[in-house]
Amino acid sequence: MPSKCASAKFGVIPWHLDEVFCRINGQVHYLWRAMDQDGQILDILVQRKRNKPAADRFFRKLKKQGNSPRKIVTDKLTSYRAPRKMHFPLTHHITDRWQNNRAENSHQVTRMRERKMRKFKSLVQAQRFLSAMGEIYDHFQMGRHKTTATVYRTLLKRSLDSWRTIAQNPLSA
Image (tube, rainbow, N blue to C red; front, side):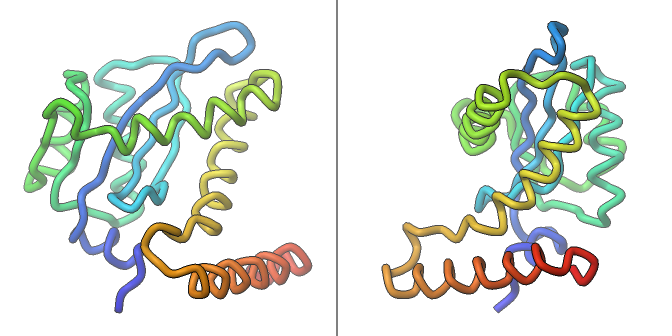
């Protein structure tokens, strides 16, 4: 059975894209996030603008991964249209109401991190921190609602063991 990453890579599942504002050193910036249907974060980008060139930059970053989704689910922000047609012309674009709740709810975790850190101090720090934390969060997110307690404990133990190995030898990862 292919992993979540493999299924996202070959375009069998939809991507959910969204942006949310966050204050960095008193200025408004936008956190762009792409995730798959299981909530795994595909990419994060922090930018100053929320317009067509900003969306184009985000789509270019997504395309560099070599991924191509079957469909893209976004809110009704018009900045998504032209870059999506240019970078993913065969992908179906869905902007229906309530369809993008997965991406909207993923911002709650970011807000909690932001509060604990007492706001982000710079654009570079926010980008670096959120990108790293997205990967760490995905490492421990196993879909508890999809498994029994015994299987969940086994998966969690396996994740913790691999995390300890990575933490002890960061160059081997």
